[in-house]
Amino acid sequence: MSVKLTIGEKEYFEGIGKIKYEGPKSDNPMAFKYYDAAKKVAGKTMEEHFRFAIAYWHTFCGTGGDPFGPGTKEFPWLNNSDPYQQAKHKMDAAFEFITKIGAPYYCFHDFDLINEGDSLSESAKRLEFITDYAQEKQKASGVKLLWGTANLFSNPRYMNGGATNPDFDVVAYAGAQVKNALDATIKLGGENYVFWGGREGYMSLLNTNMKKELDHMARFLHMVKDYGRANGFKGNFFIEPKPMEPSKHQYDFDAATVIGFLREYDLMDDFKLNLEVNHATLAQHTMQHEMAVAANAGVLGSMDANRGDYQNGWDTDQFPNNPYELVELMLVFLEAGGLQGGGINFDAKARRNSTDLIDIFYAHIGGMDAFARSLIVADDILTNSNYQNLRKARYSSFSTMDGSAFETGKLTLEELAAIASNNGELKLRSGQQELFENIINQYL
Ligand code: XLS
Ligand code: NI
Ligand code: NI
Image 1 (tube, protein in one colour):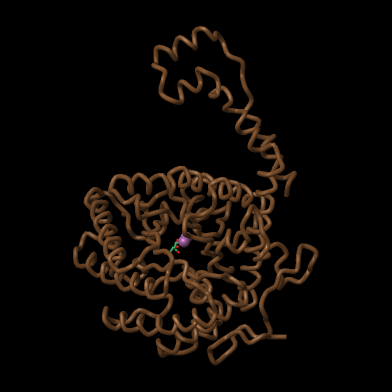
Image 2 (cartoon, protein in one colour; image 1 turned 135 degrees about the vertical axis):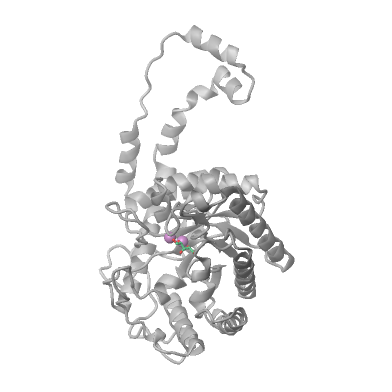
């Protein structure tokens, strides 16, 4: 039985209704086993915790092309050579999918919404047109915009970067494009605005003045922030770290690097981080490491959810499906008090050989369920297990008189040395890693 959930002319995902929660015993592949939007966990509903978002680029634009072959997926909404009509059909399909899967948010790059025109003014006109339509669709469906961004990496003009391009005219073009993308985000009530610097980096230091490029990037971000604030944008600006791909060296390498940059250039008040799982692994970190670094600095803003592949080293953007790993993320997530202003955006794509439209549903149902199950387990661990106490106990010596004098800056190095000589040789204290690891399996 299909339910009509569109305000467009055509139903694209025929025969599929709204995806419902049926619980872990259900064997219906088109139902949630764990994601129950209204269920309360740790004081908030699952919907409030996650604020799931659908990525426009992978889900409605990406037909599976890779360096070795063209797209494999037939997206009926792309079958139109008129860019305006095509954009409308794509948006009909997008809002139909987002409503049926039950995600409260979506995210886009400017030219995911509508193909770029052949001049700045034609592109601006196209964006104006499609964001008028998006306003209608958002109103009719209740779906909201988690964040918008500008694509400053696909067009050949950005081959040497956008804001960090050595050619000032390209920087100006990037400025015009970001201004339009931010205007579109503001117009649609977007809650955040993202910068991912795919080509803000370099291929060879021989032809690069890194200091100048970083100064330019900061200048650019300040300009965008000032413009946004002057035009009523109250949300967060997010930077999305990634160490490489497409650039050899990307300036927004990882969470710690970006935080250093934001502090150096006085941007911490307006910018937070949008962390992506596969980018963390490309930087040789775990996602929980990146999340903890951001949370410690008060800038854990948002998450691009996906996963990489342990046997190869690129951004495969697969859907998350590993509960053990996700529990580790959800522990950091809950202990940090959640995300600041952002949500969980599936920056993930069904595989190139997953060519049925229904595969898009399987992929998102799986991702949402994997997060939901992990949230429940992480909450259970935090409320019912010995986990936090065990970790705390490792640091108990800092609650002694000397330990707390050290923490509060009341000890000199000479005093520290005197304490050590009084203690004599020390007993080893186990880190008990395996004991900690077993807790997750026990609660899964
Ligand atoms: C690419 C990035 C990109 C950003 C948005 O690796 O993840 O998709 O999320 O520009
Ligand atoms: Ni991303
Ligand atoms: Ni990515």
